[in-house]
Each structure stands twice: as structure tokens, then as C-alpha cells.
Picture 1: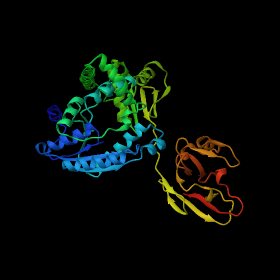
Picture 2: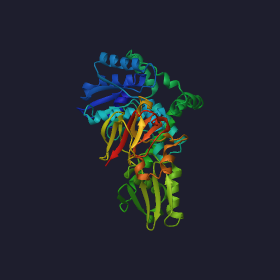
Picture 3: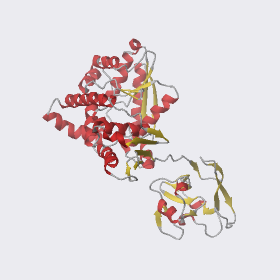
Picture 4: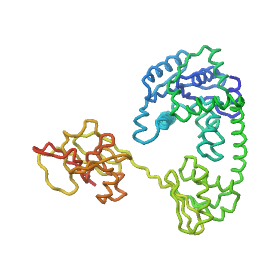
Length: 442
């Protein structure tokens, strides 16, 4: 693993005195990385800390977490384990399980930075991972930024010491040091994008072109060098930034296409859009600036709007930050994020009062919670008939600005009560009242 040590030094990945957290899944790559960094920890004057995140996807994951803790302690490495509910995250955010696991994992990592447990976190991505990433970005329609591949260090905190190390070198290191590791059964599930690329496409590619991995990585390095140079030639002092908007002078669009594309991407990142835009979307912005009349606007991914307005092309980040709110069903007063209060009371008789609704609490599932609305919510209207909650609120003429901060009582995506608006037919009060009242106090 001398190659990895040289890579660390050449790219200044680690400084003396730092606490390096290592993301350890228990697989061969991460077990080799934590052992290797610990073996050179005195030489580099660092402390190595193992971080294991159980994503809550597979039955055997708890056993794997215990395996990691035990093996790291045998090495003399301090270790922590965390468990997240990736299926729940995926369902709540309407994202893929793969994306949910990544978001949850990085959520754990970022919390460790905030608590000052570690200074950096080392990830076990290696040479083949780099080649896979470059191809995957190209297949998805990424521009030059994606073809660069992964960086040795990201955000000054996430480092990849094995990025120039081959899988064969890692396995040789594992065998030489008699290291135990586990095989993640989900790695064989080819419904995951990266697994399909790794298990299906790459074997065919390398069978035809044995040097393909090195060639792809070298291509990424060449792209990075060219990209870095072109970025250094961008002059964007006249771009105006204010309140999540970037106003680009239309005169800038006379520059060569490579300059314009990078200028747009830089402007997007400066207004908080971290996702990589595809080339077709950047081309849409360029076309708007050069070929359309004033006042024309287009919608882009990630809640971005582009507007041609006299002397400027404006990029606006319209992504709403929806406040978080969640509490169980019980009587009391509950603080809402905007200063209002949700008031729930048990009542023996019902009186008509504006803004107060009544429901039979016995008909509500015990797992139901108060929260704000989310994508996929449905509502059974009083008197019957189910609609999407969004459509129902439109029918009730609830202003758009209020829809995202309207407390609802829901179990999964079934909404039973919309505070201050209506109750579902599923929880209507019948016979002797066994009711709760609910209202919002400003």
C-alpha cells in the first residue's frame, strides 16, 4: 500500500495531529483502509477512529456492525457504530433507497464534525470506484464536471486515500495481513445503479479491454486538468448575487461556450444549487440568453428558474425550506416552528367555532403523528371520496403560502385531520362524543 501512502503525501490529505474518522462498512476496502491508516498513524502523528453506519436495510446488518466494532478494537482502533432507517428516509423523502442510505450516512458524518469528534473522514473509494463513477456520470448526461470523477479531498473534510490504489492491491494487503471482512449481500443486487455497472457492465468492458479501468481514470485526470485551466480563465466580476439569485450580464454570453457553461455552473453553486446540472440544462440557459425575448422564463431542475430580463439573465433558486414539525397525538399545546400553537383538547360537546375542528380520536391509528404535509399525502373527504391532499387544499382555497405550514394528523400518507380546515370521513364523530378539538392559535 506504498502507493496509498504516497498519494496521501502528494495530495496533502492528512496533517499531523488530526483525528481521522474512517467510514468502515466491514467490507474488504474499508477494513484495509482502517488497518492501513492505523499502521502508519504514529508516522503521520494522527489518531484513527472507525465510524460504522448501519443503514437498516438488511437483517444481517446488526451482526456486521458488531463485527466491525470487535475487529477495530482488536486492531486497537476506537470505534463507533450508528444505525439509521434508510427505508423510512426513502419513503418520507420519496427518493431511492440508495440515495436515502447515502444521505443518512453523510448526516452521521456531518454530526461528528459538528460535535468535534473527528477532523476529517476517510472513505475507501479506490481506482475501480473512480472509473465506475466517471462512466456513471457520463451515462447520466453529466458535463465535464462529472467526467473529472471523484476528488482526493472534498469540502476540505472528506478524503479518499485509496483513490489511486487498485482493487488487486487492496486484496493483496488483506491477505498479507490476514484481515477478516464481510461481504455485503446487497452488493449483488443489480437494481442499484452502481452494482449494475460494477457487476454487469464492467466485467464485459474489461474482458474486451483489460486496461479499461486505468484508461478511464487517466481520461478523468486529463479532463480535470483542462477543466481547471478553463475555470481559471473565467471573469465573472459583474455577476450580481442577492437573495439566492444570480444576475449574469447578457454581454457575458458572447464568450466561448466552455467559458459560458462553467460560468453558469459557478453561478448556480453560489446560489446554493449543489447538484450537477446536465449539459442539456446548461444549453437551455444559454439558448434563453441568446435567442429569446425579454421576460421569457424557463424552469430547470432542483427548483431553479432562469429569466431573461433586459440586460441580465437571472438564475433564481426557488427551493423552499419547509420547517420541520412532528409530535404525537395527545392533548396539550404544541409550539409550531413559526411561533403559532397547535391546541388539542378533549371535549364532551361540540360547538361550531371558526377554525376549530372535531374528530373521534379512537378512530385514529396509534402510530399517527402531527406533522406538516408531504408529497404523496391523500385525504378522504367528509362524506366520502379520496383526493390528493394538495388538490383538496386547492379546492378549499387554502393559500399556497399556508399549505406547507398547515399541521395535519397523518399515519404514513393517510391524512385524518387538517388543523383548522377539515377532518377526514374516517374519523368523524358519531353517537356519544369521544372527541378531540383542534385549533391553531396565532
